[in-house]
Length: 242
Image 1 (cartoon, rainbow, N blue to C red):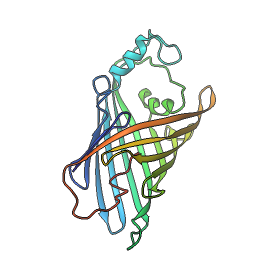
Image 2: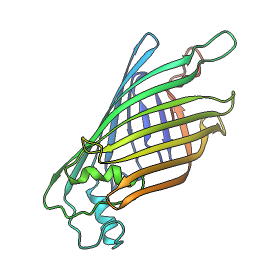
Image 3: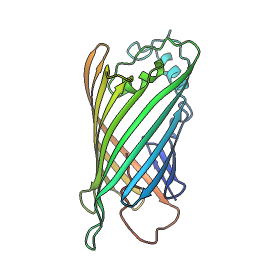
Image 4: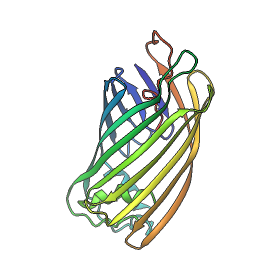
Protein backbone atom coordinates (compact mmCIF):
# COMPACT_ATOMS: atom_id res chain seq x y z
CA UNK A 1 0.00 0.00 0.00
CA UNK A 2 0.95 3.65 -0.27
CA UNK A 3 0.02 7.05 1.15
CA UNK A 4 0.15 10.14 -1.08
CA UNK A 5 -0.47 13.54 0.56
CA UNK A 6 -0.55 16.86 -1.31
CA UNK A 7 -1.42 20.45 -0.44
CA UNK A 8 -4.24 20.90 -2.94
CA UNK A 9 -5.02 17.45 -4.33
CA UNK A 10 -6.88 14.81 -2.31
CA UNK A 11 -4.74 12.57 -0.11
CA UNK A 12 -4.76 9.00 -1.44
CA UNK A 13 -4.31 5.76 0.47
CA UNK A 14 -3.79 2.55 -1.46
CA UNK A 15 -5.39 -0.24 0.53
CA UNK A 16 -4.24 -2.70 -2.12
CA UNK A 17 -2.97 -2.63 -5.68
CA UNK A 18 -6.53 -2.31 -6.97
CA UNK A 19 -8.36 -0.44 -4.19
CA UNK A 20 -7.76 3.17 -3.18
CA UNK A 21 -9.53 5.67 -0.93
CA UNK A 22 -8.98 9.42 -1.00
CA UNK A 23 -10.09 12.67 0.65
CA UNK A 24 -8.95 16.28 0.83
CA UNK A 25 -7.93 16.54 4.52
CA UNK A 26 -7.17 20.28 4.62
CA UNK A 27 -10.74 21.31 3.74
CA UNK A 28 -12.42 18.32 5.39
CA UNK A 29 -13.55 20.27 8.52
CA UNK A 30 -15.64 22.66 6.35
CA UNK A 31 -16.16 20.43 3.29
CA UNK A 32 -16.41 16.76 4.33
CA UNK A 33 -15.50 14.57 1.37
CA UNK A 34 -14.41 11.08 0.42
CA UNK A 35 -13.85 8.90 -2.61
CA UNK A 36 -13.15 5.25 -3.39
CA UNK A 37 -11.55 3.85 -6.54
CA UNK A 38 -11.61 0.18 -7.56
CA UNK A 39 -9.52 -1.10 -10.46
CA UNK A 40 -9.77 -4.29 -12.50
CA UNK A 41 -6.92 -5.38 -14.77
CA UNK A 42 -7.58 -7.63 -17.77
CA UNK A 43 -4.54 -8.18 -19.93
CA UNK A 44 -3.28 -4.75 -20.96
CA UNK A 45 -6.64 -3.03 -20.32
CA UNK A 46 -7.41 -1.43 -16.95
CA UNK A 47 -10.96 -0.56 -15.88
CA UNK A 48 -11.61 1.64 -12.86
CA UNK A 49 -14.77 2.67 -11.05
CA UNK A 50 -14.70 5.88 -8.97
CA UNK A 51 -17.38 6.89 -6.47
CA UNK A 52 -17.27 10.01 -4.30
CA UNK A 53 -19.43 12.04 -1.94
CA UNK A 54 -19.10 15.47 -0.36
CA UNK A 55 -21.16 17.74 1.91
CA UNK A 56 -20.70 21.35 0.66
CA UNK A 57 -23.29 23.09 2.88
CA UNK A 58 -20.82 24.23 5.56
CA UNK A 59 -18.40 25.69 3.01
CA UNK A 60 -21.17 27.42 1.04
CA UNK A 61 -22.41 29.08 4.23
CA UNK A 62 -18.89 30.35 4.96
CA UNK A 63 -18.73 31.88 1.48
CA UNK A 64 -22.24 33.34 1.91
CA UNK A 65 -21.28 35.12 5.14
CA UNK A 66 -18.50 36.97 3.27
CA UNK A 67 -21.33 38.69 1.32
CA UNK A 68 -19.71 38.53 -2.11
CA UNK A 69 -22.51 39.26 -4.58
CA UNK A 70 -20.53 37.66 -7.43
CA UNK A 71 -20.51 34.35 -5.55
CA UNK A 72 -23.22 33.96 -2.89
CA UNK A 73 -25.14 36.98 -1.49
CA UNK A 74 -25.49 37.00 2.29
CA UNK A 75 -29.29 36.71 2.15
CA UNK A 76 -29.14 33.43 0.17
CA UNK A 77 -30.57 30.29 1.76
CA UNK A 78 -28.23 27.29 1.57
CA UNK A 79 -29.99 23.91 1.77
CA UNK A 80 -28.58 20.68 3.11
CA UNK A 81 -26.64 19.31 0.13
CA UNK A 82 -25.04 15.92 -0.50
CA UNK A 83 -23.13 15.78 -3.78
CA UNK A 84 -22.20 12.52 -5.52
CA UNK A 85 -19.69 11.63 -8.21
CA UNK A 86 -19.60 8.41 -10.26
CA UNK A 87 -17.00 7.76 -12.92
CA UNK A 88 -15.76 4.94 -15.15
CA UNK A 89 -12.20 5.02 -16.52
CA UNK A 90 -10.71 2.73 -19.16
CA UNK A 91 -6.91 2.85 -19.49
CA UNK A 92 -4.23 1.28 -21.64
CA UNK A 93 -0.44 1.54 -21.72
CA UNK A 94 0.46 2.58 -25.27
CA UNK A 95 4.16 1.75 -25.03
CA UNK A 96 4.95 -1.54 -23.33
CA UNK A 97 8.19 -2.05 -21.38
CA UNK A 98 11.25 -3.44 -23.15
CA UNK A 99 14.67 -4.54 -21.96
CA UNK A 100 15.85 -0.95 -22.50
CA UNK A 101 12.84 1.22 -21.69
CA UNK A 102 10.11 1.32 -19.08
CA UNK A 103 6.42 1.35 -19.97
CA UNK A 104 5.23 4.76 -21.15
CA UNK A 105 2.20 6.75 -22.29
CA UNK A 106 -0.90 5.79 -20.34
CA UNK A 107 -4.07 6.72 -22.23
CA UNK A 108 -7.26 6.97 -20.17
CA UNK A 109 -10.83 7.56 -21.35
CA UNK A 110 -13.45 8.51 -18.78
CA UNK A 111 -17.20 8.96 -18.50
CA UNK A 112 -18.74 10.49 -15.40
CA UNK A 113 -21.83 11.96 -13.83
CA UNK A 114 -22.35 14.22 -10.81
CA UNK A 115 -25.56 15.09 -9.00
CA UNK A 116 -26.74 16.25 -5.59
CA UNK A 117 -29.56 15.56 -3.16
CA UNK A 118 -30.90 18.62 -1.37
CA UNK A 119 -33.16 19.10 1.64
CA UNK A 120 -34.81 22.40 2.54
CA UNK A 121 -35.31 25.71 0.79
CA UNK A 122 -32.69 26.74 -1.76
CA UNK A 123 -32.13 30.29 -3.02
CA UNK A 124 -28.51 29.81 -4.09
CA UNK A 125 -27.65 31.70 -7.29
CA UNK A 126 -25.76 30.14 -10.17
CA UNK A 127 -22.06 30.89 -9.68
CA UNK A 128 -20.99 31.86 -13.20
CA UNK A 129 -17.25 31.40 -12.83
CA UNK A 130 -15.04 29.16 -15.02
CA UNK A 131 -14.42 25.71 -13.48
CA UNK A 132 -16.81 26.52 -10.58
CA UNK A 133 -20.05 26.84 -12.57
CA UNK A 134 -20.25 23.25 -13.91
CA UNK A 135 -19.51 21.75 -10.51
CA UNK A 136 -22.01 23.88 -8.58
CA UNK A 137 -24.71 23.53 -11.24
CA UNK A 138 -25.76 20.28 -9.57
CA UNK A 139 -26.85 22.22 -6.46
CA UNK A 140 -30.03 23.17 -8.35
CA UNK A 141 -31.51 19.69 -8.85
CA UNK A 142 -29.58 19.27 -12.10
CA UNK A 143 -26.95 16.79 -13.26
CA UNK A 144 -23.50 17.22 -14.73
CA UNK A 145 -22.14 14.63 -17.13
CA UNK A 146 -18.74 14.64 -18.77
CA UNK A 147 -16.36 12.71 -20.99
CA UNK A 148 -12.62 13.11 -21.20
CA UNK A 149 -9.25 11.78 -22.27
CA UNK A 150 -5.98 11.82 -20.29
CA UNK A 151 -2.43 11.02 -21.32
CA UNK A 152 0.33 10.43 -18.76
CA UNK A 153 3.94 9.65 -19.47
CA UNK A 154 7.65 10.13 -18.85
CA UNK A 155 9.51 12.93 -20.64
CA UNK A 156 12.72 11.40 -19.31
CA UNK A 157 13.87 9.46 -16.25
CA UNK A 158 13.44 12.58 -14.11
CA UNK A 159 10.31 14.43 -15.31
CA UNK A 160 6.79 13.07 -15.86
CA UNK A 161 3.93 14.82 -17.62
CA UNK A 162 0.14 14.70 -17.59
CA UNK A 163 -2.36 16.30 -19.98
CA UNK A 164 -6.11 15.99 -20.34
CA UNK A 165 -9.13 17.42 -22.11
CA UNK A 166 -12.71 17.15 -20.83
CA UNK A 167 -16.14 18.04 -22.19
CA UNK A 168 -18.73 18.84 -19.50
CA UNK A 169 -22.45 19.25 -20.11
CA UNK A 170 -24.83 20.88 -17.66
CA UNK A 171 -28.03 18.85 -17.79
CA UNK A 172 -28.91 15.86 -19.97
CA UNK A 173 -29.01 18.06 -23.04
CA UNK A 174 -26.16 20.30 -24.16
CA UNK A 175 -27.50 23.72 -23.22
CA UNK A 176 -24.53 25.06 -21.27
CA UNK A 177 -21.21 23.27 -21.64
CA UNK A 178 -17.54 23.62 -20.77
CA UNK A 179 -14.33 22.40 -22.36
CA UNK A 180 -11.43 22.08 -19.95
CA UNK A 181 -7.76 21.28 -20.53
CA UNK A 182 -4.97 20.75 -18.05
CA UNK A 183 -1.23 20.29 -18.50
CA UNK A 184 1.17 19.33 -15.72
CA UNK A 185 4.86 18.53 -15.23
CA UNK A 186 6.00 16.47 -12.23
CA UNK A 187 9.55 16.47 -10.89
CA UNK A 188 10.86 14.55 -7.87
CA UNK A 189 12.78 16.49 -5.24
CA UNK A 190 13.62 13.43 -3.13
CA UNK A 191 12.58 9.77 -3.15
CA UNK A 192 9.30 10.66 -1.44
CA UNK A 193 8.78 14.34 -2.33
CA UNK A 194 7.57 15.66 -5.69
CA UNK A 195 6.75 19.12 -7.04
CA UNK A 196 4.03 19.64 -9.66
CA UNK A 197 3.38 22.66 -11.86
CA UNK A 198 1.17 23.48 -14.80
CA UNK A 199 -1.99 25.23 -15.91
CA UNK A 200 -5.73 24.72 -16.36
CA UNK A 201 -7.71 26.21 -19.24
CA UNK A 202 -11.50 26.43 -19.29
CA UNK A 203 -13.96 27.70 -21.90
CA UNK A 204 -17.67 27.47 -21.27
CA UNK A 205 -21.10 28.88 -21.93
CA UNK A 206 -23.13 30.43 -19.14
CA UNK A 207 -26.57 32.04 -18.80
CA UNK A 208 -24.87 35.44 -19.19
CA UNK A 209 -22.62 34.40 -22.09
CA UNK A 210 -19.40 32.50 -22.79
CA UNK A 211 -16.28 32.86 -20.66
CA UNK A 212 -12.63 31.83 -20.86
CA UNK A 213 -10.36 31.23 -17.90
CA UNK A 214 -6.74 30.13 -17.52
CA UNK A 215 -5.17 29.42 -14.15
CA UNK A 216 -1.69 28.41 -12.94
CA UNK A 217 -1.38 25.22 -10.91
CA UNK A 218 1.29 24.38 -8.34
CA UNK A 219 1.41 21.59 -5.78
CA UNK A 220 3.80 19.52 -3.73
CA UNK A 221 3.29 15.83 -2.99
CA UNK A 222 4.71 13.50 -0.36
CA UNK A 223 4.47 9.75 -0.85
CA UNK A 224 5.21 6.84 1.45
CA UNK A 225 5.19 3.22 0.29
CA UNK A 226 4.32 0.83 3.10
CA UNK A 227 5.50 -2.32 1.31
CA UNK A 228 8.40 -2.38 -1.12
CA UNK A 229 7.57 -3.89 -4.48
CA UNK A 230 9.57 -6.95 -5.45
CA UNK A 231 10.20 -5.58 -8.92
CA UNK A 232 10.99 -1.92 -9.45
CA UNK A 233 8.84 -0.62 -12.30
CA UNK A 234 7.40 2.70 -13.40
CA UNK A 235 3.69 2.19 -12.69
CA UNK A 236 1.95 5.03 -14.49
CA UNK A 237 -1.55 3.81 -13.67
CA UNK A 238 -0.89 3.42 -9.95
CA UNK A 239 1.04 6.69 -9.63
CA UNK A 240 -1.23 8.84 -11.78
CA UNK A 241 -1.12 12.27 -10.20
CA UNK A 242 -4.35 13.91 -11.47
